[in-house]
Image 1 (spheres, helix red, strand yellow):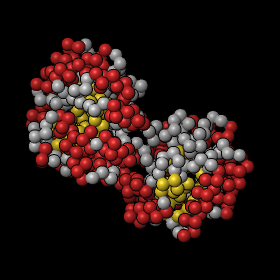
Image 2 (cartoon, one colour):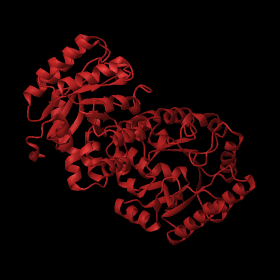
Image 3 (cartoon, chains in turn cyan, brown):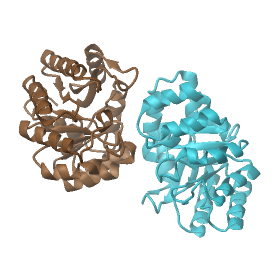
Image 4 (cartoon, one colour):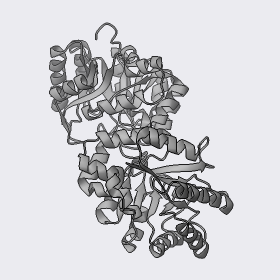
Length: 252
Length: 253
């Protein structure tokens, strides 16, 4: 069964004090049977740090072009032109497949004008936008993004952690109302019943396994495999949905 | 291996939860659990409904004294005499602790009913199992701080220790109060679980599930969160035995 992990970080993370390496990520992928991963920078502070992080991910991709893919992540409060140019460089030149908005570390309220920027750039570059959910409330509360997600209905939105922190009902609320929303299952409140609930309410084709960390890869695979999904649903959740949402057909 | 949190009976708060003795034993056998701590199903409609559920737990304990350990749950907003008399009755029937849920009963630890619960536990020498992260803001762990400090002799198990992202409050309490224990059902992820063990010791961390569907998952998390075999022995059995005062026979775990 194809397993794709669309949410992995590398680099020294200034918020969580972690430092994931390429070897660690690949080692755990091999150990857990994950064929491909989408890698994004850790949480950084400066523009230069993010740019260096993107370059590092590109090098990782070049060494493993069928297994490792890049995801752009940068604070949208930086200079707008700088943000747009770096996103364009990552997607068009470095072959990255998606963008990330982290309201927690990008200090981004959905209610401010600048929150439109990642949505606009994702639309222009025709790539999915992953939005971190949960930690960092209230900015990270899923439904605060409801108006933007509806307005940008042509942009694929991946809700990282599906809301988490007992706010999973907010993630589900959005997914039921917005067909462009996908629920991503990394580092949630550990409750396998909700995986079943998501499958019943929005279907496995809108749910995707992810780990957020090499430490969690085996755990989330276990959760998905033990949550009562049938074989077809499990195949979608573990890999099929991510391949389709991130347009990875023929690339793995 | 002991699961420190399963419910028995029909739950009047959460739809569709009606667990029987047979189902519990079946799941325990399937998952390799040697013991389980049984709470009555949630009910806040009448004293009769609570009694019925507590009696059922007590009967289950009598039937399987080597495997089933029970705790009682009563509306903590009853007045002192009635609450204490009810709890005392269940202690005499073999129940080993008191469950309190701020969500199910709208219980505020800062009210005089907070005092009643802790006084009762102290007088009857019973541990408290208090759900946290539910019924916010009443269920915020730090609302228990003054009472935990005032009653250091009462073991207080924080049930769901990280629900609603209140892990930091659970940690603050655990750091300040030696009588605090962290129960992990529907709460911390594996990283936080390991952090609890590293920071506060495996003898203050307790594996629990709350629902039957989570038993296997709870075992998986404790098995794979990166703690040592010796630490697992504590989190998955010895700590709850210590809290319940049933250390004898611990070598079986």
